[in-house]
Length: 462
Image 1 (cartoon, rainbow, N blue to C red):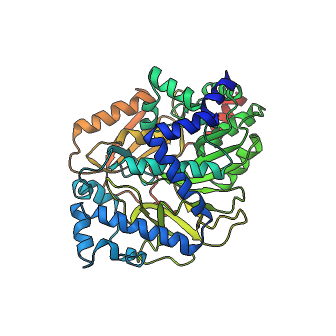
Image 2: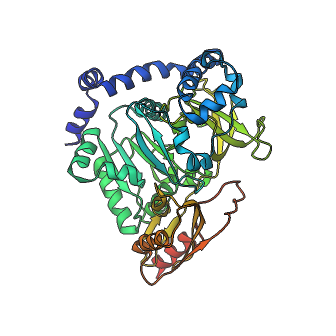
Image 3: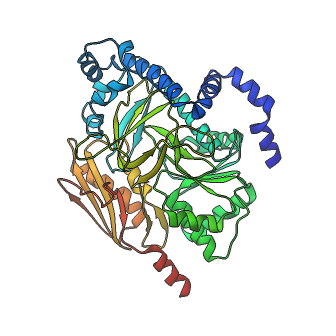
């Protein structure tokens, strides 16, 4: 069966035909052929491509009322803009996305769809993307997979929890889609010991080439397998850690259990996968043909020179709601030095923050913190949130309310939370004027003060 699945997904004749029959696949193939060499291009070549795409983005962005006011303020036409003009643009913030979404949208964009993010900063936002963005998102993901040694049609095990992704693979049609893509999906909303053992057995049978997972979920699975004395024979190519900060100790402990290296990746639902480690593991190469990345001092808002700064990202291919100088809320360090792999694309050498905790429920289940962030996706009335576990049966939801927050919304949050924590646990909602940042300079949107490893160790000893 696995060999048959590989034939369906990896056969070159199938790929050749699909890349010519499907307009979407044709667009991906063309964009990949154009962008893959740009990872090795000279700085001048890359800058020329970025400037051309930036001008095109400016011409499209001018159709949105907010950006029209900004662009017309420069007193010149879109084709006269250069990358040197970019620092003069205002920042796109999450507050702007919340307050002025209609002024930021492009009318009549092709293939527009709505998307949501709880965000690593705990500010739930709604935004729009289009067909062009979707094509280049697929290309960026493919380029990042290739840097990890994977290939189109590779067997992929996804240890994930985003509700938007999960809904796409539910039911018979979703399962068929997974089978045809040679993918498997394992839900991080339930990471109890029996469930993790089931995930291990399923992946042992599936033999994925690539595992894509939240850093904390990977680490939790690795620690569990280590405690059971289990040494998996998978994955066959690589492990990709995404959506959270990967700490050095986590990487070391994951690689001590699994027979493959860990490749760190950076991105988000707003900007797609946009930076990934190559085999040298000396930083994450930015897909700079699609993303322009700046770092700024979060206080002065001036460019950060040779040190960590707040990441400001321009997405060159969202023609439904342009993201120009988007303050994503993460801290990072840029590095333009050459890489031994031969790629010349600039690198992110470190990203600070972006961590979600695993939560130990009163009934003993282990649940990824993303479970609690998904409650806020697409819901107005909340400017910011933070979900905190004080003890195994004690939880607090901090909310900075926005217009539209009501007692009914609070009751809905409590009802959804209690589906997971149970009726007996202590739960309260506290309204606040602000949620302070952590030492990393970021807002942690989920925090567990329960020492999970210690509790699980005590349970095993008992």
